[in-house]
Length: 289
Image (cartoon, rainbow, N blue to C red; front, side, top):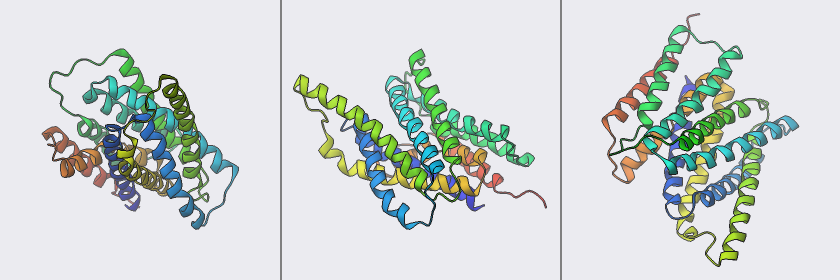
């Protein structure tokens, strides 16, 4: 039961991070937001990681670092896909794939659930589509490039869950620290390239960054917290269940948008949220002894 709660909490927290990150990306380029979010998360995680009893090992750094590579690539592709649109199709596609990839990996690897668990997983997958669906007036069919970007983004997010799950159970938060170090390093290289290009063209490199700092810090802290939650959930529960629950992250975004920005939640999204909660409750039912 606790693992299910942690999985849902990670989804909500990822959604909160996306909300702040989305607002920040309206003020300064998304790649700038992503890079500094990784650095803020790293700064928040390091002192906590040092306080948590854990063993720093080669395996922890390896799997955490690899997850940082997939995570950085996934974010690039996600933003590129959503920029092409339509979001109403590409966002749910990414979320569903991010759940299906690790779910399949877990089942192939031998994870087993009671019969009602499989029904609940199916319910959560449907809920992901409903929650992530944002009705758009006059939405057009997605372009092939947008579909390719969204597909690979979802696959790479799913790979992130798989890689983090490989880290040793006694490694504490070191895998997530390694993740942030690698992701931050990759994104800083990208920022350096953008800076050089901007100087050659005599234009601002990071326009709007000053006004986005508060949102970036909030996003970085929320993203770090979400990563800690999913790592904890993976150690307590199954990869199959945790990855599917975490893929409900659009729910946290739309809930916060409704509370803060007064955005309307569509009826289909309400249905998705209720289906998600019901499916999670079914997942929490233990098998008979």
